[in-house]
Length: 95
Image (cartoon, rainbow, N blue to C red; front, side, top):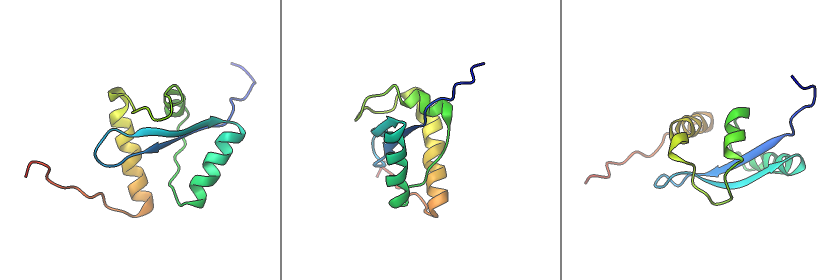
């Protein structure tokens, strides 16, 4: 095990309720700090998950999350709704 600490990483996702979430910002160190600061300033819920961040950091800006991560990202989105005190708008798309 290394004594060297991993740099701070941050990934921002956008979810429109229709398509798969996409990566809208990603960065390490000072850039990660700026992403986190902007998110806090705008009341965006934050969640710390080192393993998920490592996986998402491999994606390019604008890229949709892969199907393999749908379930875990759905849990993150649900967490964000709960933290924000919101209820998702669920509509029957079959009508």
